[in-house]
Structures are given as structure tokens and as C-alpha cells.
Image (tube, each protein chain N blue to C red):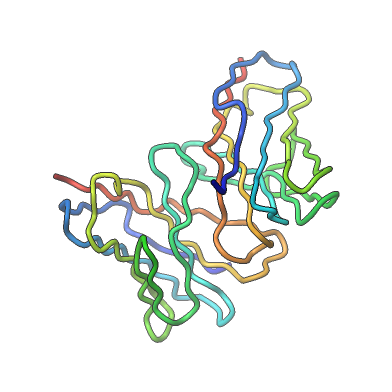
Length: 112
Length: 113
């Protein structure tokens, strides 16, 4: 699975959009981009994933660049409860081990 | 509610005393997996199971056993716990390996003294 690079920390004002970047310059054509978050030692929570098209669900939007070398997770109206560590993970669909490789992630602090 | 349930949430035990952490999912998922999380090391896969009666080692399987006798349950067994197994443990499941998002349990914080 390709390696990802994320900034270690970010701040966001409550009510504003939080844009979390992820670099995955070595991504292969059959690898998906996944985003999870972990709120203070709770179990990681799946947010969204995509292959090459932009995706949106009730939690967030995922913007993947045309060359697929980077992506941005967008939380449109961040709340204090969105304070968490956000993980960008790249992996092949149908992986033999199903293993998720969690890097250090980005700690997002939403401030009032 | 679709969920992965782990028990117990917290456990303090002594070295060498066998213990089992249970994991159960109600989503009819084929794939289940165990992770441990340690400061500075992130989440690491211990064991995984593609389906009933099919289990395999992850990255850090030493000192652990698992079983998958039925689809919904995937217990993690520590036959002789040691202090280096003090950690935060998570069980996860998904419909199939590598497909879609995973659902994680709330975690089990284990302390071995």
C-alpha cells in the first residue's frame, strides 16, 4: 500500500470548513483513498473513501486531484465534536490481509 | 444498531493469567480483525479472519490466539499475558476484506502487571 503524508496538526474555528490534506504521490491505479478519524482513544471511525472521483456523504467530502497524488478531506461545518486525529490511508480493494496501515495522522483541533 | 461490541472495556490482570477479550458484530460481516494501539507505534494488526474457520497472523501475532467458530464472534485470547501486552485493543469488521469502510469496536484497555 502506498505511503501517505499528512500535517501533524491543524486548527479550525467552529462552524468553518476544515480542510485536511493528504499526500499520496506513489499511489497505484487500483488503490483507494480512505479516511478515518479517532476521537480520544475511541475506536477509529470510517469517514469516506474514493478512487478517483470526488465523493460526498453525510459526514464529509473527499476531493482527489486529477493525478491522484493528493487528496483533501473537507468537513464543511466543523464542530467541537470533530476534534480528533484524522487518518488518510491508501489501500488496494480486496486486499489479502485487509490490513489498514495507520500513520501518525493529523490532529484537528476545532476551537470555539 | 449496527455495531462491533468488545468486552471488557477495561481489564487489569496479572502476568500469566489467561484472559479472553470478546468481539461480536451484528452486521453479518465476513471479515474481522484485531489491532493494538500503543503510543508512538500507532495501530498494528494482530490477527485477522476472512471468514468462519479462516484466521491468519497480522504484523504482531506473538502471544495471542484467535478463533472464528461462528461468523459474528472473533475472540482474542492471551494464554499467558505479559506486561508488554499492556495496550489498547480494537476489534474491527467489514463485509469483505479490503472492501468499504471498517467498523471498529470501542476498545479494550488492558493492563498486565
